[in-house]
Image (spheres, one colour):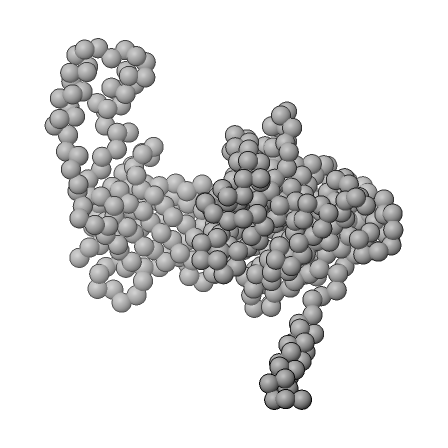
Length: 418
C-alpha cells in the first residue's frame, strides 16, 4: 500500500473508532409492553425517548423534550434532534429526543399520544434524572412544532385515579419552543389558547410555507394574553434547525437561552416581584435603566428595569412583576442614564388635561391656542451628550456595585457621579 493510501486508511480508521466511541444512549420505550394501537413490532411501532444527560456540574434541573420534524413521514433526527439535544445538554438542560410514530402507519392521534406519554415519562422519572417536574418544556421543528403545539393545546385533564402511574401526571409542557411550524387552531379555540404555556417562536420570512401559520399562531397567542416571544429572521430556508454556526440564524439559540433564563426556567428558585427606587447623586433617576446581573447563579434570571417615570407614584420608583423579577441572591448593579431632563406627558397636568379633552373631542379654540403656546415654550432640545453608565456605587470604588436581593424587601439603588 502506498504511503498516501496508508495515511488515508489510518485517518478513516481513526474516524470510525471515534464514531464508535461516541455512542448515544439506548432509546427508552414509552410503553414497554407495547404502545396502544400498535400494528407491528418494528422500532417504528415503538415510541421511545433517548436521554441526553448533562454533567452534574452543569445540570440546572430543566428538561426539554426534543421533537424533530419531517412531515410526519420521516424524522429529521440528526440536525433537528441529536444536534439540538447535544446543545441543550451542553447548556445544562436534560434533553429527551422523541421517537414518535409516523404516517401512513399511524395518524395524528397516535403521535400526539406519543408526545404526551413522553412528557409524563419525564415527570415520572424526574428524581432519577435530577430535574424539576415543573420545569419540563418541549421544542419542536416543522411537523415536530405542530406536534408539541397540538399536544399543549389538547393536553386534556389529568387522570388522578388512573391505573397506570404515568397517566396520573400532566402531559402538558411548562413551556414550548415552536420552530418554523405550528398547528391549525379552530376559530372557536380562544378559551383553550388562553391556557397555552409560555411560548417562544422562531422562523424565517423566506420560509413562507410555514411562516403564515407561525404569524397566525403568534397573533392568536398574543390576543389570548399568552406570554409569547417571537423572532422571525429575514433569510433562511425551511429546516434550519438550531442553525449552529450560522452567524445570523445561529443567534436564535442565544435569544432562546436568554428567554429561558429570564422566565426562571433554568433555576429551581422562584421568581418574585421587585419594588424599589433608583437615585443618581441623591435625586431620583429621571430617565434610564437598571441592569441586574446575577453574581452567584449563572442560571438566575437577569433583570432590566426601565425608568421612564410613567404610571408610578414617586419619581425613580419601579415595580417589576413576578414573571420579570429576580430570585433571591446577589446581583451586580449597573445604572444607565438616558436623559437628564424628563419629557414624558404622563405627569404634566396641562398635557393630561389637553389630551383628555382631545380624546373626548371637547377641545375648544382657546384650548388649542393655549396648547400651541405651551408647546412653543417647552424645552425639547437634547439634554444629554451620551448615555452615562454607573457600574459602581462611587466612581473611586474598586469593586462592582452588588446588592443582595430578598423577597419582600424593597430595593434602594443609589449611585454617584463623583
